[in-house]
Image 1 (tube, helix red, strand yellow):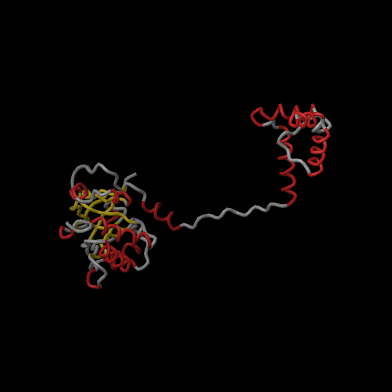
Image 2 (image 1 turned 30 degrees about the vertical axis):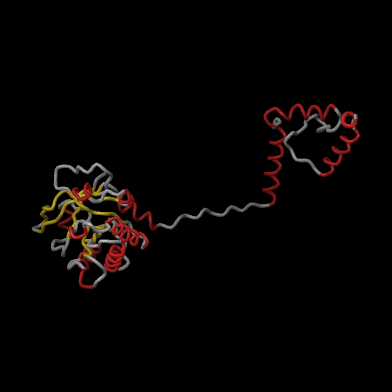
Length: 287
């Protein structure tokens, strides 16, 4: 089910109750822009984080990129992580790629630097851009590694690839403040919470010597009931019995797939060496 929310740069001036009453179920807020410098954070980021946490509003963040290579993307990721201060946004961390001065740079490398650094910190990451950028510049297959947030102010999103969020307007007015409006098509809170849940350990099952003996006895019985593999063993077992080399069990069962003891092996060899079949074969070889 699609969930409606807003994104914002600068401080949120309305209450969280106003947002919820208007139908907003999440907020994606700007952390800042550019590399890891203290004067490039968003003016509302700390206030917005606190406001959403106190008001129980799920949130994500986005970082405006000016990176032209991998190193720049890494620096911007560090800036973003510093603003988050160890938090885990339930609507992810988004790399905003729309700055025209990055054109001609290594956009693929910039995205890798940012996204891989965010993932290494254990956070969910995606890439944001408008429809024109997705069609013209962000076409490398590597962008399929991350969720896409597509901006297109229209009655429908016309991006033909997969995407997780659609920014459908830049003019959703709530209680006098203007917001961008978004539809999220994935249950990001559930996905992200599952990322941090520890794997359940299977309880250890005690396996005693008596259990082993019982299992081995059942296995031996099952094997004894099996016919020789693919029929080839039936004739050789009949030959061994006919020539007195192997007698089988008292009830006549040959147990073709069962193991034998050393005593049984020694008796089988003795029977073979003393058999007329063996003597005939020796005479045949010696001529």
